[in-house]
Length: 206
Image 1: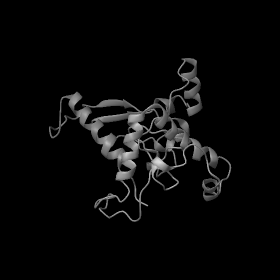
Image 2: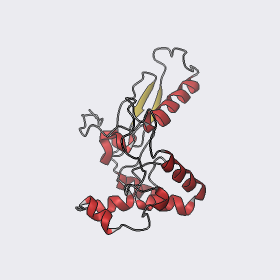
Image 3: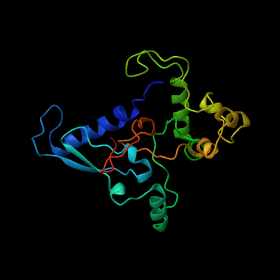
């Protein structure tokens, strides 16, 4: 299994580029010592392992939800109190961690985005010459839906018996199949990037 590069290539790099522009030091201009931005990242207590320090000196990450000891449930309660109960989890449009409910939502509410993800799903089938970070070719076929069939044909309207059997479901597995994994994504933390599951004294991954 190879590590996906979507977080680095399509989130982190563009953000760093924009931050440099906002600071007035676009690449390759050197940023003076002591000049930095503070970026707040919305990672909750149930996904603390995804909280990381910035890897450049001109950015400093803050995690206000961890500072307040807020879980995802706390966030949902707060949004509900503001009349924003339907706020969806954040994630990339073509994220392979989507559950059936998320795929249905895209299909039923945004035909243009559905067409885009169906096209993207077909385009990744054989990968390319640089299918992963090491430049190795993709082995087998790639699909966005966990059933490993084209997204346009995937059984997103129901959970089939075959899918349940393939997952050997224990408590909660059916919910993951339907709703996707619990964590959302942020620009600095993809659900597929969780390597470390330990937390230091500051609430950051170690």
